[in-house]
Image (cartoon, rainbow, N blue to C red; front, side, top):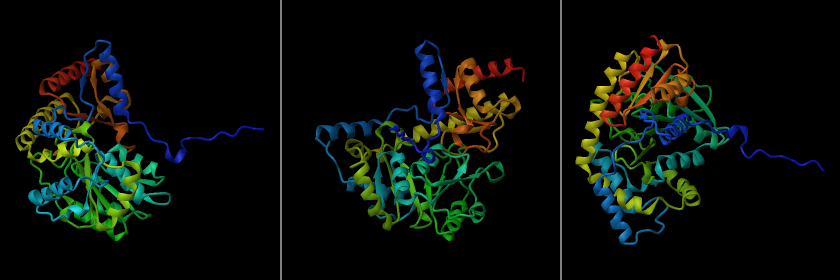
Length: 390
């Protein structure tokens, strides 16, 4: 009898590589062999978690707050998040609409499970954060990647939604953006939401970098409508990546469907992290210091990259990234970053992580590293680029 074989990973659900993580692993291997690598690839704060947060975590452990919590998060944290929207932006958000999640990735997984599926469309920008499309693949949804470039400041435009043939069941944008660092202009998110709603879809705005803007006007999308979904978390602004805690604010009608999935997949968000996060909003001085340091790094790196010959299509106003054109060197972005790692000992991120549009001609720099290391990275890149004869 012929033995049947089955694929564990159907083609529709194949996940694309996360090249930045693969390059990080290569860099770590080089470091283990004694080489010194300047990291300008990874999107992780180099700051330690604020002491007030760590003290709250230790207190939670001492008080035995180590059991399952409510599946949507502890009520105190849900209320604290709602209060923060009122305090910072004057947006009235009911705590019942706040869902505490296992990182923002947990939020996107829950949204994909509830709102996507076979025959449904996920709309994202290209370039854009790579994991969005992979969550769509996991849900077996069709991903519609809409190209954006410097002509629109890398914003996904309402006119692009109007031109779609299919329904934009779920549209995700990041504000501020990864990889470009742009902050959407006032009114752009509102127009985008109107276009999505007119086509019977829902807009999700990823605001994970909302606490890291430099001179640009930012306002949460929750001020626009109760139908907008906002995802945020503690990883970037609060330097809490390993605590794996995020949140989302959803329309009332979605709370129960999301809860039922969360109960089965996650049981509850990490308990100690939740009690620690209650103190995160009190770390005002730490947050100001980190934000100002990022601004100083951006103000150093941006002109340095241009001096070295990189073309920066749009000045970044948020996050900690600079998205650059490398066309003058006539190299594919994957080749460029592989050679930069091997020959200059500088780790960078290729454009392929962010989609197919502009993928071969652009790379991303992260300035989530100390000023001294950024200076060293620029010194190494300058010597390497000169060796190329450009």
